[in-house]
Every structure is written in structure tokens, then in C-alpha cells.
Length: 372
Image 1: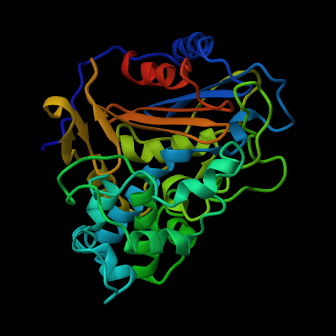
Image 2 (image 1 turned 180 degrees about the vertical axis):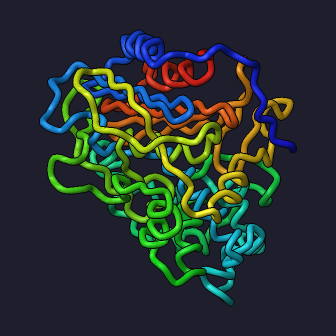
């Protein structure tokens, strides 16, 4: 496929108009803490709110659990390592993880590309994950399933489908990708992510473990009771990233293109803050991987209506294509999205567990797709 980044010409939208739009959108979301953040060509508008009393640290400076919205970080890491010649998309995961280990023929065919694009044939989670997870489903379902068990489960698995033939969303597969890249490079995942993605983009407030006391947002169940910080166990690559909304915008601004961003200024008072911001790509080797993860690579669903890049969902909108990913943990939610070539990026976080009538993702998606 060819990436199309052109969008209809629209009149510039002022920060004040964006602030009003975010304030109106925020009314649709019920959560103890909520942040809606927009970047337009590097000019940032941040709306914070929620039904809980704000704490001593401003909401936009707290680190939020991204859950599955961590996967774009894994995608950019893989693209970077491929660009460096350290791995290839078509490398077979089992050969890198356990050379010579006897595995099912279908497992032998699973490549790094299959793992990242959810086309490996693996289930969403390992078959033996649930017996240990169900008794603590609402408190710590992943912590008792460490990295070595994820790898063993992969090497002993029997894929549901032949690799490359069907799309099936899989936290299992992306977690295996993380362990495979660590094995291939001889570098722990956390260190690899920091060296290749976080440090080059200046994401100083992004990490994969809880930070010092008072620096992380606290998640809540639907009834408002707090939940402990998420322990992802061996599923780090699929859902362990924590980041502030400001760092989320920095990450998205690197993807979106558009005008040269300006260095961020200090946070202003009040629930809505408008200021310039965004990173310069000081490392030119990031440009290729950033373009690679924006490129559509597959279609799925009824009549192949749904398009995906290596790591982003890819939808049409009245203003051009949008790329996005959402995530949820036991008590938090996150949304990341951008419109390539237009300078528009949207990041949103909330501290309430998702439920059937939840409006968080729809609200953030609407900000991304329905505004000029």
C-alpha cells in the first residue's frame, strides 16, 4: 500500500478554540482523573479534569499506565533495530529465542513481523495463563506469569492458524517479540527500549516500571476504589509502558510530521494549558523507522475494510487518515493518535477501568477524527 498523508485544507485552529473543544469533550468522560492533550504543529493544548480532587502533582505530570497503547513503542523499537541491520522482519522468532529447540512446524514459521502485526496465529494469551490469573483477575493477573514462562509457552504452543493468514489481536505475540529482541541483541527489553526509543526522543518521563511515590497516577475500579499499580509479569512489551501526557505528545509529535516544533515551556495555571512543545529529531536515523511504522501493511475484517500499519490502527477520516492505538489496565485507560502530515496529535489518559458504557476512547477518537 502507499501511504496517503494529504488532507483537505482547513483554516488554522487557535489554541483557545482547541481549549474549548477539549473542555466540551471532557464533559463526556466520567473518571477520577482525566487528561486530554492536543498538539497542532507543535503547539500544545492540555485539558485536565476529573471528579476527584487533584493531588500535589499536576495531572499532566503524572505517569499513566498505557496498557496496550505500549505496543507502538515496541513497533518503533523493532523498526529501529531492522534499520540498524541487527534483526530482520522475516527473522524467525524461535530461531532467535532458542536455536535448535524442537518446536511445532507452525511455530518455526512465525517471524518478527507476524508477532508485531498480530498475524502469528497465536492466541491472545497463553492457554495456561488463565488458571493462575483468574483467582486474582481484578488485582494482579499478570504478575504471576514471568518472562521465562512466556517464552516456554511460545516454544510449546500450537498456533490456531497458519502464520500470516489471519489477524488475531495477541498480547502473547507482542510479548514474545519483546523477549525475542532481547535475546537477539543480548540486551534486556527495558534497556533496549530506553537506548533505542526513549532516550533518542527525549522521553525522560516514560518508563516500564512504577516510579517514585507520588509520580504515578492511581487507577480506579468502576466503583471508584483504587487499584494497585499494574505488574505485567512477562508481558512487558505488550503493555508495561507508563508515561506522562506531555511525554505522550512528544512521542506522537515525532510520528506526525508537520511544522518544526518548539521547545516546551513551563506548565501554566488552571485546568487548560496551551503552550508550544515537541521534540526535534536530533538523531536522523529515527526518520526511517518513524516512516516505516506509519506505512499501511495489511488489511483485515469484512471485505478487508480495516487497515493496519506495523503497529497502529489506520482509519480514514474527513481530514485524512488517522493512526491510533488505545489501551487499558486494571484501573486506567490511554489513547494515542495522530493524523500523518497534518501536525495533529491527540493523547488522552483516564484513571477509571473501562466498562461497556465507557465513553473515553470514543471521546478521544472523536477529537482526533472530527475536528479540523
